[in-house]
Length: 373
Image (cartoon, rainbow, N blue to C red; front, side, top):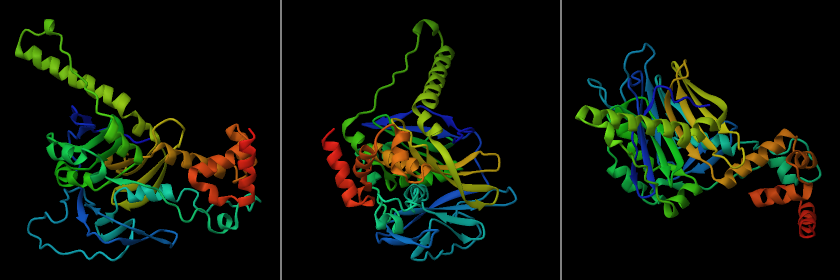
């Protein structure tokens, strides 16, 4: 579970279907800083830990700089008294790679998405008769998922452009049609000011793209009891009370999905007293499922966070893969655990995009059985 302790919610700002909720740190993190590295329009070859690679368009990366003695760190390129120097970026990139002794470059959201794409990527560990030779020998390769850039999400560019920053702001909860699209947290307010525009370059799920076109943000009106107000001090107190009520409602209701979604975590890289991690959701049906990546200190305090909301179909694929892996990819046992029959499970796999893993004659038999139901 992701812990938002140390971050405070401020009143939301809306633009069309987009609602932006600021997150403020009373005390910023000073010994870890982030800045963006912007790349060109050419696709890049990305290396994965299993020594395979894939082609990816990488609009930007984040570079984390830190100190080991607790002294303040500066975002790279802003230090006074030191000559600026260019960091060479190779064509072949890892998801997280050191570019200097106290500097780590990682690709925002690619780290989280890699964990999802690699989910049970090896395929069946036992060559049950239903699976094709392709499934047994090559697993789920190739594994493909769709996403949209922020520039394709209607109204997001205008919402980010007119957004008013709060003092001490270190993060943002981004909603589209009052559905949580992404959470973004950084260590320091200066980092957020610099990285706020990169939200338009991030990737968002199909659900968010569709909600931006069809579902406007609701209007949450703050109602003040005028009978309790007889002075400016009373009015100020009522305004503060309404802000507290909004923050409590947001944190307990609107943001509950991302707070409770992360159930499985993997440490990716140690950076001083911090750890870069990625999280996978439970893939439970009919609830929010978010991929996420985070940097936390030794006490679990959140320094960096970026999340990606999975669509219902993407959650369904993760759910089916999890259940198959739990039952050693045995279709009959998996079907029994899901409360269905083998033919129905086979058709669910086909609808989820995994039909190529099943032998054609087996899948044809499942289709025939489905037509007779």
